[in-house]
Length: 297
Length: 199
Image 1 (spheres, rainbow over the protein chains, first blue to last red):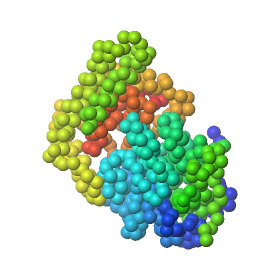
Image 2: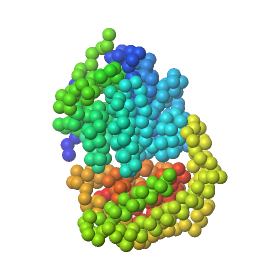
Image 3: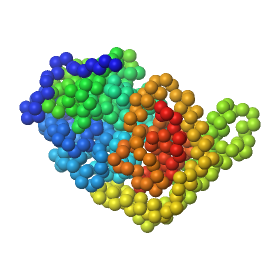
Image 4: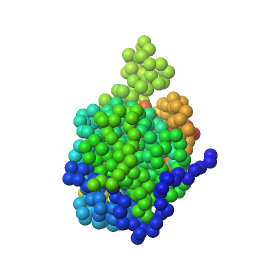
């Protein structure tokens, strides 16, 4: 099948890391905002991971997020103590030292024993939930979605009265990348998401960035390029809202009341996608559009 | 806790198993579930898994439980110690000890039936994901090679299989269904030819 390079209109060519100053940061930094970083498939320990991490720090200086979501494949290959240093603690040292709390989901390259590694904040569990401000986050283990986990998710979603419900895990329910979406997972999870009012889903696994037009009212993001890259792996389709597969990338998010502001940044510091999402309580499923992001005052 | 969970799950799976094996659900006569061979097979499987868990509990009593820690050294050391202890305590363990031939044959039937129920989009994407299946010959008492990822387990298959305690999980390697101790990363048993091609 013919592949298309997915290019965003107006995206600047990738510049070298040194040129970036995070001057395009447009997210609101307010006391009552929930501010976080999203990275996926990050744990290579290679030069690219470190370059992305350095870029993240530049943006952190302008946008001091307080926690980070890791979408799995946190540590590739060997998982010896020195690998945790090289593939996690060293690249994100500045953030860890500043008190940024990382909340990891498990990917297919991750030993489930990572749930005992305190800096990943899984509290010894394969799946868990936590709350930040008006947002409830649900972390799933999409490698092994057993009936107990599905039952747990349904109960937690049902119990949550948070203004925002965000679910994240490793395998994408929607993607145009080569390996394709996890349709089987989607058949099980999406009805629960719809029934219980999930607003946003973050996944990784595919080493690209993709955002989809809202599906049954849910905003789906694939943010799997924080170290690895499958260049040219996306195919623009009818569901595509934005895609970037020319370089590594990460995402920063601010949630203020019923609005979620986001920017996606390349390794070189270019903003490759951005927008504002309104939660389901204020935007019904058919009108759940993404609004343009303007610089906050 | 894990035993209680397994007991509850076993009843559910027995019902599912009966329905699947007979090809119909809720037929007259199915009320006599205890007389169904599926019940006996799964009870036998559960008993064998239980025996393993009993052995494991003895080993963890001496090694200690693992709580969340910042020390990856501690996590790795504990996994290695537990793995070595399990292997040493089961020197004669062999393929088929837990997945007996009778259980394996029935589980293979259940898996085959589940695969036939899959929708076309699921089958299509599953084929695309075949490249992710680990490619090695599993052995009993083998440490699962850390160079291979743990392939995603088909989520619709899990409710069909006999439930397991939280210490143990199923995984697929090539066309093998393996039983793996999660924390110790040890392969406890496997059944060859369990997974149809395209799975």
